[in-house]
Every structure is written in C-alpha cells, then in structure tokens.
Length: 448
Image (cartoon, rainbow, N blue to C red; front, side, top):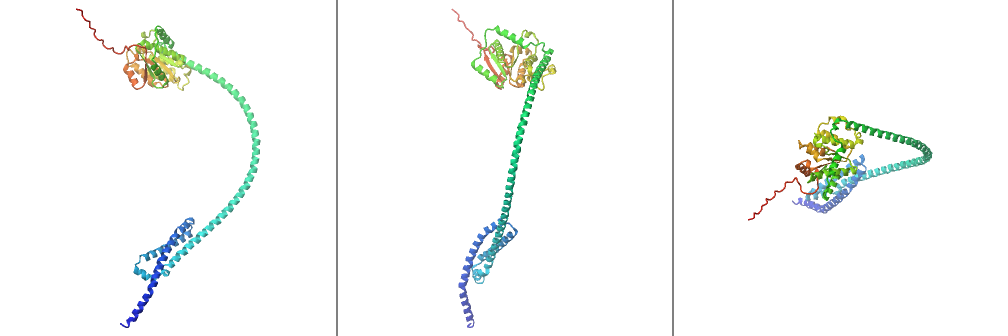
C-alpha cells in the first residue's frame, strides 16, 4: 500500500497537468473546424464557376479531387461532432487539430490553389487566342479595305459603262416606241374592222337562230305579244276608272321591286276589272322605263281556243326569245331548236325560260288571271304548280305579277306565311268574295 502510493500520486499529478491542455485543444479544434467549413463553403461556388467556364479534362480532374478532399474533411468533421464528451476529452489530448484536421485542410487548400492555377492558365490561353483572332481580324479588315478601294475603282468603270448603255437604251427605246406606235395604230384599225365584222356576224347569227326558232309550228296557235297587249289596252280604254293604290301599298310595291326575294306579287281587288287595268298600267310603266318584261295576256277569242298551261309558258318563252334576241348565242350552251321541239312537260319549258332569262338578268313576268283561269279550268291545281315552278326555278331577279282571283286564298296565305309573296290592294268598295252577313228580317207593323 505504501509502495503504490507514489505511483498513484504521480499519475494524479500528470492528469491534473493535462486538463488545461485538453480544454485548450478542444476549443481550438471547434473554432478552426467552423472557420474551415465556412471557408470551404465560400470556395465551392467559385470553383464550380471555374468548371463551367473551362470544362477541360484537367480542370474536371482537379475539381473532382477538390470535392473528394472536401467530402473527406466533412465526414471527419461530422464524425467529430457526433462523438460524446468523453471521446472529445480523449481526442483533445491524443488527436488535436494539428494531428487530425490540419493535413486534410491543407490538402483542400492545395487542390483549391491547383484549380485556381488551371483557371489562370485557361484564361491566359483564351487571351492568347483572342489576340490571335484580333490580329486575323485586322488583316481581314486590311484586305477588305484594299478590296473596297479596288471595288470603288471598278464601280466607277461600271457606272461609266452603264451611262453609255443607258444612252444607247434610250435611243433603242425611241426607235421601238416609234415602230410599235405604227404597229399599234395598224392593229387598232384591224381590231376595229374585225370587231365591226364580228358584231355584224353575231347579230346575223342571232337573227338567223331566232328566225329558226320562230319558224317552228308550235308557235302558230299562239298570239303575238303585241296582239294580246293591244287587245287588253282596248279593253282598258272602254273603262272609265283607273286603279289607285293607297300610299302604304305604293311603298310596299317599291320595296318589292327592289328586293331579290319575294318573286310573286298578287293584286287583290274587290272588282276583277280593276286588277286587269292595273296590270296593263304596270306593263306600260315598265315599258316606258325600258325594263325587260314579258307577259301572258288574254287575247281576242281566247275562250274559244283549246289552250293549256303549257301554252302560257310557251307565250313567255316566245317573248323572252324576242326580248333577248341579241343575247341568244352568248351562253356557252344556248337554247336550240331541238330543245324546243322535244320540250313536253311544264318543267322542260320552265327550264328553257330560265335559260333565256338568265342572260337578261332583271325582268318582270305578267300573267293574266282570266287567261290562267281559262287554261286551268279542268284542273285548278295547275295554277299553283305554275307559280311555284316560276318562283322556285327561275334564277336571277325575276318578278311575277298576277291577280288573286287566279288561285285560292289558302295558297296565297301559305306563301304569305312563308314570306314568299307580296299582296297589294287596289280599288275601293267591299270585298265581294267575303261571305256577307245575313240580313235581319224586317217586320212590318199591322194597322188595326
């Protein structure tokens, strides 16, 4: 016991001597670790930027080695921070900063200096390349200046040649204009002669074609347009009254004539003779304004003739040929004599009429109600069929005028409901077609 006492006393004295040194080493290690980690954090963006600017193989190797040392240093630091207090006390004595962390920190600093040296070398290489490019650019500018001087000299020569060529060109243009002027005058004269000749030939061909179509026997039983119009005018002259339209109906008539739809106009009157007089006055008004018009009017002894609904359309076709006599051959596929001979149905004749009116454009069609009632005496459904065919199959701005007495009230109401017709009233007095109210019986008082 007495022998062991000096050893224990010496050991306690050594421990008491090393305690202040351990505390100092631990504080130094903690302080320098934090500073080193902060410095390494500042190095990372700078060297990452060097790697982006100079992505060479040596730079990539140097940055990779730098990151490896940094990771190793961080792992050692993280391990030291995770140690317990007892381990920290032992390591502060046996593994201070100089023994444990300084070599790693110096390795990081050396690799960072290597990356900086490589970046400086790359920058110097870029500066050298830039200097060489500037020298090349200067030589190119010098050559371009020489070429520009030579080009300016050549351009002066070219301008002189162009001035000479311009003078020669003006002289040639004057000669060509004079020669072409004489040729143009000669060709213009020839064109006038050819045009006059062609116009006369076209008029002759149209006249021959019209005569061929008018010579067909199917027109022999039909009156001419002048005969039927003169007959209706004479019948109008026997009457003393003239048709009068109220102001709203006049406005309606003007709107109807200017529109491209609503092709049918019905004249509604209390007295049938007033509607006939109105249609003749309308024909004279349209003829005075030189607007194309065709009609199918009653004529002398028309009631004694055996006519059909096809004869009404034939009358319109006959007048359409005469109105558009100068345009018969303008169409690529004009109406031929064979088509007139082979037409047998209402649709065939309406198609022929549409072909003739297509070259005229805007036209009026007047259909007499008495004539229409006469030809549809056996079959009243033919009148609406004719009006529907004219209304739906004729193209262009074609207006059809007739009286309400030729068709039924139901048909007119149907067209009015679909906005397919216009109805105007003429004359005065009561409507004789409406049923009259029954009169009251009159009683007489007996005298006593």
